[in-house]
Image 1 (cartoon, helix red, strand yellow):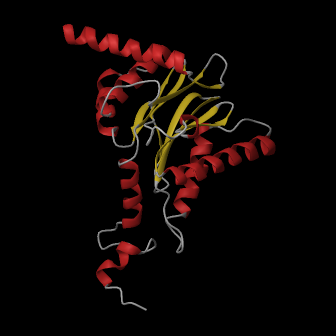
Image 2 (tube, helix red, strand yellow; image 1 turned 180 degrees about the horizontal axis):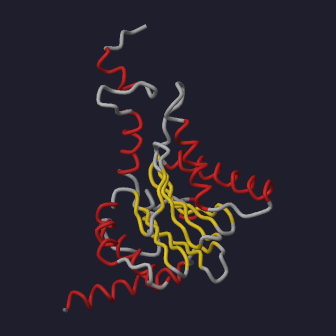
Length: 249
């Protein structure tokens, strides 16, 4: 068996802290998210909006097989960034947890409860040997008795509620825009436009119906709806018009 220098032991083992109190494997998992596709979540009084940069790796890939926004339940959805396979496992687990909750308590699972469940699963993968952290973050969004809610779960298992947030490579740019332009009083249509505007500034190239995925859960019917290409193209064109008007001023 090869000798592992003590200095690198805490770099390789998930259960060993470094001298400065870090778990390096958890930090590396976070780096996988920071290099992932940009995903955005915005809540307003009228509902929640999820928007993701869905750049197809090859023109030979069928677009329908490349998802970044997933329905968890009628009233719950998730947008992902990071390692796709890890995200898929977490989404499947989230769906199971939502169904178990409904069958056990005869009520829909809240967004916060789902975030806690997923956070617990992620945290377990930072504490036991033979496991590795999930290299994916989820934006969990939905509507429950507290109204519209958005939570983000990190690879460490930590989770926080947000009014507007982003994960992935374009997070810092998107958050700057939200700090300046977000208001809880915006309409769901304005939230859609703000999400696309933030996504446009955080990625390279133009937005199009083929490289953007968007979903909405409105207070009106409290049901997950993925936006079709026609409607998505309408809002993308609207964002372009707004940008042109801003450039003229």
